[in-house]
Image (cartoon, rainbow, N blue to C red; front, side, top):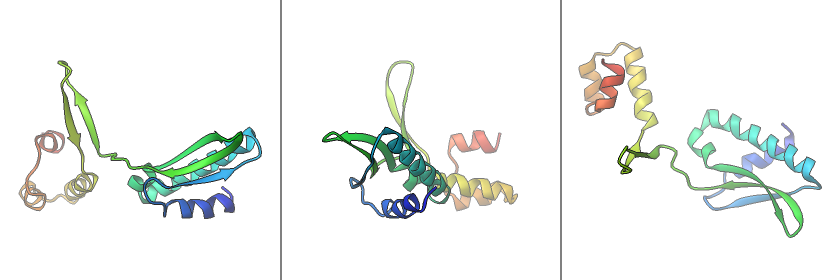
Length: 133
């Protein structure tokens, strides 16, 4: 990664949702190379803050016959999905990575189930199936 992409990616993570940075490039080859460098920056940032990194989108675009690489922050809820059952009905599913992390750490530390339930205000059916078969 270049100093250019490192500096500009640091600015990109400060963007508000809906804001974007446009970088003009000379040709398709430069556009592809720059986009790849920004992708690498995002991968590194994901280790630190995966939710924020998932909101950073890197695209290549043509605007007024000029090529650009766009780094944009978009609203995204990576912890919510919709499950479609066999009948076609949808139901919302949410996960809480912080809760999951706490649960895994308490199990790793060999905390008793009762203490885990007290700290987490109970366990879901899925958590019981996964961690206490």
